[in-house]
Amino acid sequence: MAKQKIEMEKVTIEIPKAIMDFLRSVEVRPEEYLQYSLIDAFRADIECSSGMWGYSEIFKRYDLAPVFKAFDVTYTNPDC
Image 1 (cartoon, helix red, strand yellow):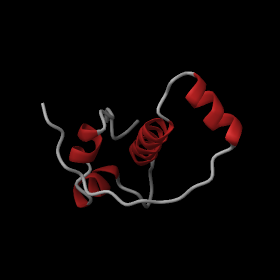
Image 2 (spheres, rainbow, N blue to C red):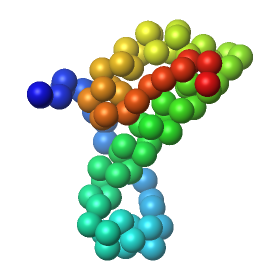
Image 3 (tube, rainbow, N blue to C red):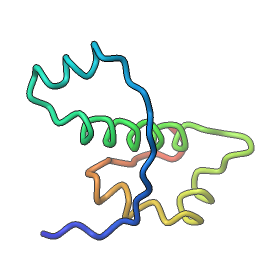
């Protein structure tokens, strides 16, 4: 099954060398690990947010379902 093409942007961040060394030592592709981790952390933040961030509104407005699906990130209960 082919993944849907998701529009991407490049950003540059600094990661401690010790973390990068560890990821490489366990044969993880650091870029993929960091990308997945960021997307999953974002998902958790919007799922568990309340007040000014409405999960359903953000989810629909930014069409996040295809993004989470493309990166195998599971989204669940909007009320945490």
